[in-house]
Image 1 (tube, rainbow, N blue to C red):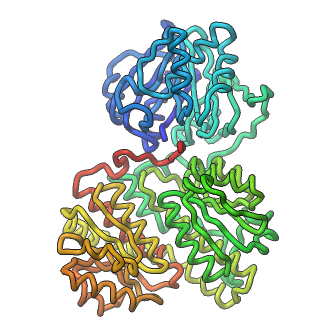
Image 2 (tube, rainbow, N blue to C red):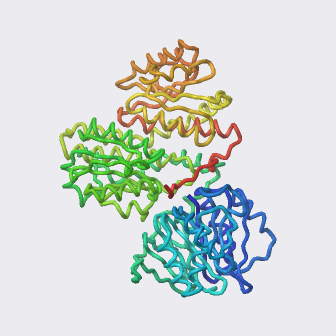
Image 3 (cartoon, rainbow, N blue to C red):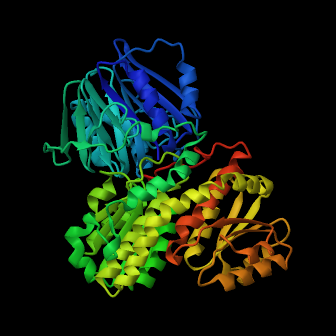
Length: 609
């Protein structure tokens, strides 16, 4: 949550900051603000709403300065308002600061500072940081004041701070919230992720937890919390600016839905050896002997990635023969997870920065489990902290509602299944069949995308309904949940995802002519059971939109509307069945004139607990 960007160099800071905020807006868009250093002090502007409101507010103003910080907010403490928007400052308006994270002991700190005479102007937890730095800076240099402040706070933070009477530096630090330093030819740019950086440079440094950097126009110095200098490795960004643009689509979400054939192809490229029926996963090479002897896998993830994990459970247990549990990462460490050396904990996260998932991985490492990761962002914290893992290579995903990252995750889970299964008793014949069918998936997705016009018509037909069920069985039960989540996220309609067999154990009471059902009814091992469930819905006057296998004429006679997907191996069906549900949710929301890329109350990367 929240996006931070800072710049120090020889160019005008404001255009770089505003552009950076726009590229970070998927992290939060309740309010935005910036502070720019010039010869007369610090110029600060804030606005409620999206970054364009801030841009309009300063349009025409002569705001000069080559050093600045900026922030786009996802509200935690205090409602969206100008006074709660970042940057926040101290009493003297000398120290300005932006923050991503949560300061858990801010109430105690605030009370102590108020006793010392500090006056607060916001409801946020962040403001205590500026005042605490101010208090320490009365006795020690600015950088030491920052150190002492961070030593007294509890919680998570990524911060960037500037000081009016020390105008040649930016100080940044992280603990639990990501920060990336981009190295330019004539300065530096700091940001919460690489999105604002990629148009300026492909050379970056990832700060680790417990590190602080002092940055001038000419150099940077990274120091850890033991006050020792840290030599940082320079990494190369593998995304391009073009990949992060809309390319003529109205929304990033539609662009990313349409990119799924390429995203899946990139996820499996070079990793399938079809002739041998195996998966070559270089990221697992160093732990291959440990994975061979695993007796249990625990998948930890949140949101859409959690539903990918549920599909992975079916895959791992049916084809690799490994007991698999799927846990909400947000709950994992708040009980007593039973882990050992024969257990692997697999984290799934698009951003690689999800706070709950990262905390689960750290708990697993403490208990001696092998930790693995499936992440999309190279160099992200989860990628660095797990013992081994596999990158998605799906390219940047900007839309808040995940689409291509999800199908990419399913592809990687299929590769994991092949890898683990062939380490055990999966036959060459079965391995070859899985590999052959997985290789076909990108082309099969293309055939579904060609039906977008028909799906658009169906979505318009049902867009007046406020309640919908999404029902599926076995591999498609998680897809029903994902379909419901997509609709909820971007259209704000009430949608329930349920296993079909559970419908008659209570939820069927809701079925009537005003409660449509989206039924995933592909021809698979539970097809007949699913058809019985559809009959139960129709017997209660429920409308049914069926997602069926191409050529299924029987189902067309039973349902109100149908969308068809090609036939594939049952374990790979989710890669196809989810695509029409993404399109349905997209068109459903667009028909309501909603901003599907920036749904209310949500942010792309959840970096706070």
